Length: 337
Image 1: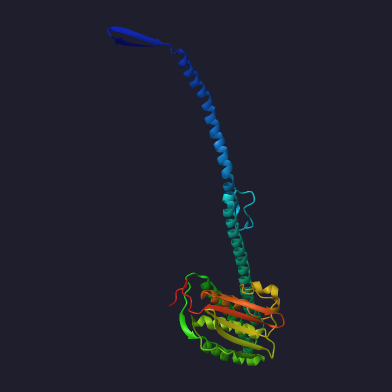
Image 2 (image 1 turned 90 degrees about the vertical axis):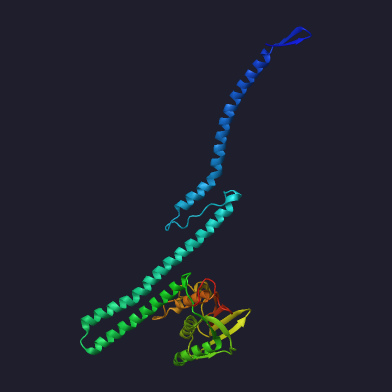
């Protein structure tokens, strides 16, 4: 009940009305809203938590998969099919990264095993010769023969270590190149003359194809080593009366150097891995042969100069190895001095 009084013309008027029903209605409304909103808020919180949990479940699965991955479980991959579109691209990229890591670990394992094998051979040879010499040597000639064998094994071991050190330095992002501008035609001719006696001894013709004066900016020492490896490989696998040719030219802003032989060739299944360290096709692994680092050094030389190495071969017809280098040199990640 509410009353309102007002004085008009000397008279007082009072008006009152009953608000009991309205107040009761408001009380019931507040009670009903309290009974409705409390469970609704609770239900909303529970449902929101469930939705958030479900939404984060793919992230948790990705995290769990990443936590399981280790050196002995590099084959683990994230299941992309059941992920939402927002995370599928991320998971696919993560899987690609894992593929690269797995391949790198496999190559590292093979590399370590090959190093152990290659180092074990000359070390065992040194030990065996020393043991035999100690037991059976009776004359100075026997001692000299044993020392000669030890010296040969030590030389092979030193060459292997030197090549491994070169590849390790080439893999470093802080590798330093001593770049200088040289005439490629003159350099190739010098290399041909240097290896000419070896070619003549094996009955192989070593020629330099017509190369015009061709200035290029490279590390001269590394160039000599890379081309020397290619010539040595070509001579080793070219039969008597065969031919090894060296050529150089410019194609589309690239200096192109190629060494071609008429030797035994390489089967197609070996070509994708021929530049891998220590990889040697069975047919190219004669007793006393190289250690399988020659072409790996050639590839490292090309990549250090911002170029690439390519190979084409047909069994029984010969092999061509091509180096493509930037004509103006490469000053990217390496620091010339």
